[in-house]
Image (cartoon, rainbow, N blue to C red; front, side, top):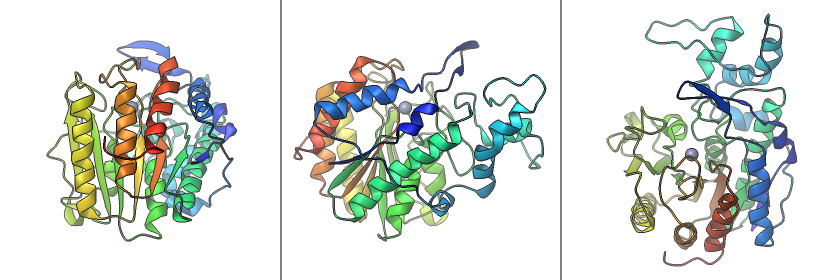
Length: 343
Ligand SMILES: [Zn+2]
């Protein structure tokens, strides 16, 4: 299997996190990449460094002012009196009408949905290189590979067209889907991260050419809280082209696999030319975020099912946090992809 990784992404190693009113170390650390690379190593899979993708691939899903903000915010922030080491928003727009502001403090609030995705000096380059990995994996699939894996950090699925959140900067899964869409009339995105893929949903919510599906922990009392409900099915031309499959936090393998099977049945009806898998590994029972109770065997079964769909698959790394089990969860999922069949 073709695998893509850019070591430059490790320079994004955010520090700040606000959790239940306490300042904590950010969970989306560069160490994650080393744990994931170890999983590839166990399978004998080497990684290639991707070429740089043109900015137009980012503009296919993000607004120009959002890209300009991500690119320039850290340098501008450093000129503020008493600035901290990272861009972290502390004002947020609410209600309407709203005016796009000049101050970088206010633009941080416009473009950052919460405080969990701080921007440091190397974050722009890192998120661009993560997008390069996703695009290279899409290219590999377009060239005929049955599956390709992009080890992306930071992740992307909580970022919409111009608001980053949930440890994510550029929406790497959406970028891969938009890139595949250049060659295929229809593309599907199946998100199995334990958190609702709200950014990907938002980006394609009014479109019928990209089907978005998310299997995740119920959001009434879990991040991202405000979205992820079954009644969110799309709008306008996109009505009927978004499927949310929320599950209880107590979910174990069989119910999770059944939901993925239901998602794949909807994908089969849609008959896309290719599939993007937003691969969060944080549904694992030992993940520090404690969203669900999925075992290594559950991940292996999920990989087999997805590969068994017969669709060319671009597998994009999303969540999954610091634990030695992160390595084994990736190994289990990809071993399933490489031995397709019934779950
Ligand atoms: Zn997640």
